[in-house]
Image 1 (cartoon, rainbow, N blue to C red):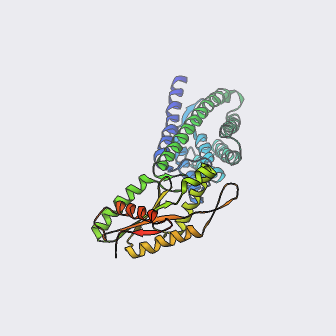
Image 2 (image 1 turned 120 degrees about the vertical axis):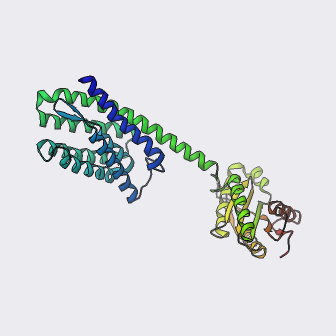
Image 3 (image 1 turned 90 degrees about the horizontal axis):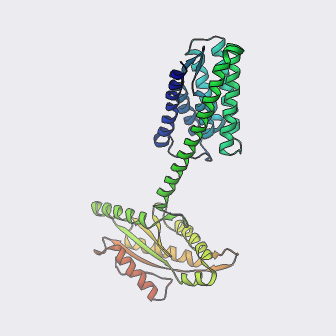
Length: 362
C-alpha cells in the first residue's frame, strides 16, 4: 500500500513539473520574480495556478482515511510569481472546489477548504516581502506543513493522523525543494534566453537597434519600397572627432557621449523612424516613405540639434560635439543607398564636417 501511495504521489507531482515546463514555454511570456505586474497579469497567474490545483486535486491520493496531493504547491507558485492577489485568487478557486466538488460540505471539507485560504494568505504575505527566493520557499512550505497537519489531526484524531502527517511532511518538503530548484532553473534559463535574444538585436549602451537589426529592417523596408514604389531614405551619421573624446577624456566618457547622442537622435527623428547604432560612433536613421528633400531636412534637424546640444561628461564637464550626415534615397538613386549614403557621409567629412551632404538631386 505504501509503495502504491508513493507511486501515486510521484505521478501527482509530475503534474506540477509538467505545469512548470508548460508555463515556461507557453503561459508566462516573461518569467521574472521581481517584475511589477499588471492587475490582469496577476489574475492570469492566479487563474492558471487555480487550474493546476484543481488537476492535482482530481488526481489526489488516498492514504489512511485522508487525501494527499500537492495542491499547496500551486498556492506557493502563484504567490511567488503574482504576490498576494494571485495566491488569493488561486486559494478562492481551490476553496470552492474543495468545498463543493469533493464529497460535499462536511466537517472535513470545511476544515480543508479554510486551510487552503490560510495557506494562500500566508504564502502571499511571505512572497510579497523582501525575503530571498529560498527563504520565501522555505517559509511557505513550513506554513503548508503546519496548517495541513493541523487539519489532519482535527479531522482524524491523533493516532490516525500520525502516519499521513509524517508522509505529508516528507512529500511536501522533498516536493517543495525539487519544485523550488526547478523553478529557479527555468526562471534563470528563460531570463538568460531573453537577454541573449535582446542582445542579438539591441545595443545596450545607447538603447538603439544594433547593426544586425538595422540590416534586417533595411532589407525588409527596401523590399516593401520596391513592391509599393515608395521612397526609402537613409541617413548615415558619424560623430566628428570622436576619437579625441576617448583619447582626452577616456572611454567611459566616450560611452556617456554615445548614450546622450542615442537619446538625441530618437528625439530628433520621427517617432516611426528606425534609429540604430551601426557600430562605434556611426549611427543611422532609416526613413520609410520619406522623399529625398524631406530626408535632407530631417538630417539637417539632427545635425543642428547635436550642434546646439551640450553634452555632459561623467564629472559634470560640458562638451560640444558635432556630427556629419550622409543622405541617400530610393528610388532617386539606382545604386545601393547604403553605399550612396556612405559616399555622402565621406563627402561631408572631407568638406569640413558638421555638414549634411548628398550625392543625389531631387
